[in-house]
Amino acid sequence: MRNLVMIFALMFSATIFAQEVKPTFEKQGDQIKGTFFYEDGTVRQFGFYNKEGILHGEWKSFDITGKKIAMGQYDNGIKTGKWFFWSGDKLSEVNYTDNQVADVTTWSNKDKVVVNYNQ
Image 1 (cartoon, rainbow, N blue to C red):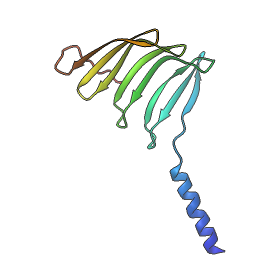
Image 2: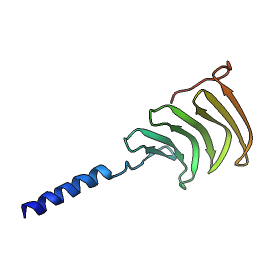
Image 3: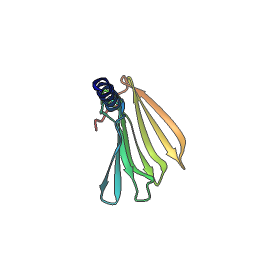
Image 4: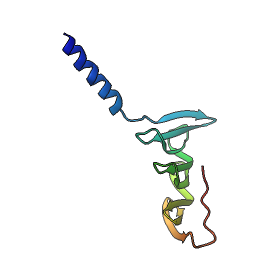
């Protein structure tokens, strides 16, 4: 009986550690803020949904170290305006029109116009 209890305890503890970090959702005004996490609990991305559950408003994504890697806007589920993507020493500005890429401009840290905004 003691061995059975020990096996059950080990299985239960392994299950706890194997569970993924679930996203959180919180109401903010007329929108719902969704926050998604990496397995270690750091924020992967966050953004907003309208009351129908459609992506709407600003979204930001981060790498595992917390460094911002993407930022943009949704308008009722459609990517709109300028989106920014950081990768290494490069910043890409992607302009969306009708949910499609209209043009892309990329800068490196050598260019004076690169600014890396934190959260």
